[in-house]
Amino acid sequence: MTNNNFKVIEYKTEFKPYIIKALIELQAYEHDLSDTRKAPSIQVCEEYFLVLLNNIENQAGKIFVCLQDDVFTGFVSYYIEQNEVVFEEDNSNIYALISDICVLKNFQNQGIAGHLLDKIFDHLKLKQFNGRVRVNSLANNVSAIRTYEKYNFKPYEITYEKKVN
Image 1 (spheres, rainbow, N blue to C red):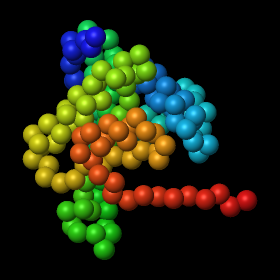
Image 2 (cartoon, rainbow, N blue to C red):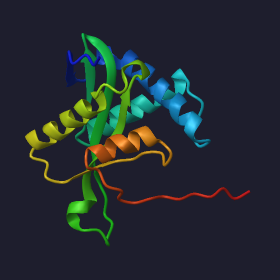
Image 3 (tube, rainbow, N blue to C red):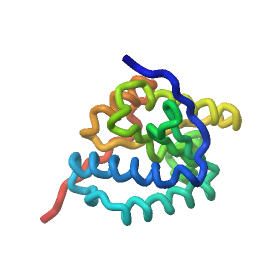
């Protein structure tokens, strides 16, 4: 049975340890999916979190956290990216990038990722942002892709890689 007693609120500094914990869990999951991901560690996740906070501060972004019965269940972050790709339409060169979305393992499959995405969409509408929203995923992260497609995200660009030995 799904518990719907949740709220999505703006990040406060007291949530940092919970976000670090979530990033470690996310890093472990992605490390299992791809040999490009470093092994999870507090050091790597704290370093990444500082970069994320800098991007949010300098690129008009936000972090939102989801609480269920006042227990941290996950978070989402975004910031505005601006590119100057000559071949792209102007409205495609400025977009909101969802840099991270993470729901702790014990709270998955309860619709929390959808609530976090809804919060971003609502926030962008309030800011009168009228552009595109993009999110990246590892190609074999089936659960993330399924969630994004459920929320009408469409593939935009696909990157292939090959190791040269």
